[in-house]
Amino acid sequence: MGKSFDIGLERLMGIGVPGIGETQEGGVKPPLHDAGRQDAGATGSTFYLETFGCQMNDHDSEKVAGVLLGRGYRQVETPEAAKVILYNTCSIREKAAQKVFSRLGELRPADEQHGKSSNREDTEEEHKVHRDGRALEKNHPSQRKIVNAGGGKIIGVLGCVAQQEGEGIFERAPWVSLVCGSASYRKLPQLIAELEAGNRRVTGLDTDTDETFETEITRRDNPWRAYLTIIEGCDKACSYCVVPFTRGPERSRTSASILEEVRRLAEAGYSEVQLLGQTVNSYADPSARKMRFSELLAAVAEVRGIRRVRFTTSHPRDFGKDIVEAIEAHPTICDHVHLPVQSGSTAVLRAMARTYSREEYLEKIALMKAARRPISITTDMIVGFPGETEKDFEETLTLLDEVQYDGVFAFKYSPRPNTPSLKMADAIPEEEKGRRLAILMDRQREIQRVRNERLVGETFEVLVDGKSRRESQWSGHTSSNRVVNFTSPERELLGDYVQVKVVSAMPNSLVGDMVGRE
Ligand code: SAM
Ligand code: SF4
Image (cartoon, protein in one colour):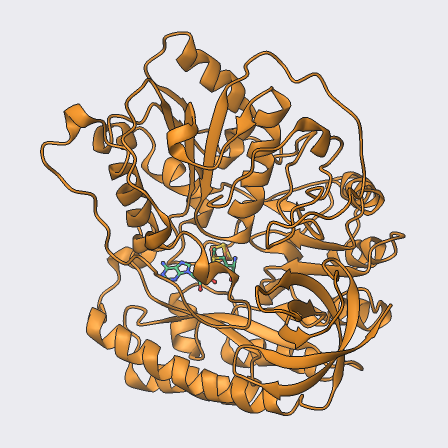
């Protein structure tokens, strides 16, 4: 993770204590839980871990950090200070993968430089009209220093680029000595030990494991919201997507192990959990209990101490009324559903192999709109898929108007290796993709502006997770995942649930005043 900490093991016992302490401003809160010590192991070595991509990658990195810390490694803040440098990578779009190779270029040893300078292009590949600005500030080029590997460092590539490019990475960046996909992270200490014992290169690239990546120790970065992977991989085979290749087939955790972890998280002081999966609602309990996803949601919501349950990402095909009913019945299940649509045109959806039509998707939206409490809906969209006509694109725009999303992550189609859409005819020129993306974002920004303005005067419960440098300024998230910036004269609010009255609104956030505290 770009942000990394130098932390002790006492912070990590069990399933991870909420970072005793760091606030987002680096301030210190009293420990929520002191679980005692564990044998730190003998390595005494250091690692630097940086994460690219989605929340699943963020959470995988938390688990990787947990595994290494549990073996006595110490996490450090810069590649310069580390003996082992790890990049947990994303290959969902070409620019995300390029960014990794650009970062690896910065580690090129002096004898490999040949006068080449590092590639510092702006690699921001994701375009969001979304309320959560978190990802935008991550890994900004201005925050980085060029580092020369040298000095016997171990450089490793983890995650989707590792799985996709495999040993090819050694050819493109010969100074890399470890390549490991997400199904093999448990083996990392062993792989590193092999390198330390003199092996030149090691790989962990199986995807056929039927285990999910569960660890005894997970080093969680957010002291209030804990992420939990409940299903790994994906069986959906959308024609543009690398995930089925990079993360392998779907594997679900047992409901008992998920619930046990949630109970331990609650005891450790977490009040919010987010269940993760590429298609989280395709969850299939492998135990005899055979809990449905909606039943699991309800059971998690009933764990004492848990105040908010989130889940992402839902696939429209497996989204049913039972999930809406679970949200209605349990106020602790957040009133927010991220339901990626990708396109408003049935013809394009068919070419994408999304398994639903525009009309079928709208039926799922109707289920949520009919709910007894308002559910905030966000989505992902791709513009410029091969063969997308002006009329298809117009249908995507009318879908925005019809659904009235509260947030949209929009992407230009990026051709990816091994995917069926790579060979499809009628590629859309980059310039045209850019034009469509800009139109879509403008349209959605206006929708969000109007929707958010309607909330002025309302009061929401906010979990406070940020403190501004400006005095009396705080920020947090509502149950519907809206970002709220607010004023309060209180000295300490981080991690608290407070009531905030909205006084003004912007397309991506609300502004308010605190009116109550529990
Ligand atoms: N599993 C989720 C689903 O089915 O919607 C999404 C997972 S994917 C990591 C996140 C988003 O990346 C997708 O919803 C899609 O919008 C986008 N994406 C995936 N492949 C892409 C590609 N080749 N080009 C552009 N965007 C892509
Ligand atoms: Fe990729 Fe489709 Fe699976 Fe989502 S459902 S991860 S877009 S293949």
